[in-house]
Image 1 (spheres, rainbow, N blue to C red):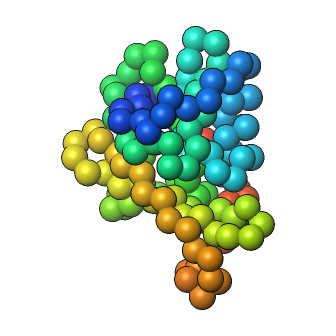
Image 2 (cartoon, helix red, strand yellow; image 1 turned 180 degrees about the horizontal axis):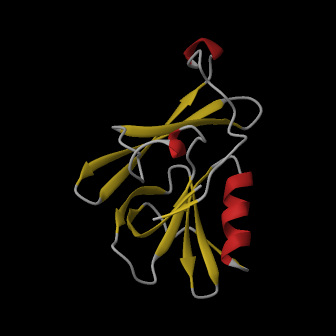
Length: 139
């Protein structure tokens, strides 16, 4: 998970409010295959699932904190949150289909989500690795 200062913009809906500690919220998102992003709230967090969020904005600091999934290798090189890459993507499965979440930076400080589904295994990249390891970065 990449943890950073930022705020949700342009949500498709309001997400799902969860009570508990921030750490519990981040771990719930990490373990939930269709969780796209989690943002900190006064009572816990708001979890946004795939297709429930379009974009978020990076902030320099403050109380707004959010986290999104990233593969372990992406976290090792470059400058966060995309680590010098044009985009960051992960593929997760619900046991039947494969879902790809891609995050791209469209303008300064704005990052956008794109979600796609792969029903045929031939559409899955050959280098696909299940999201098992993770890194946590505070930026």
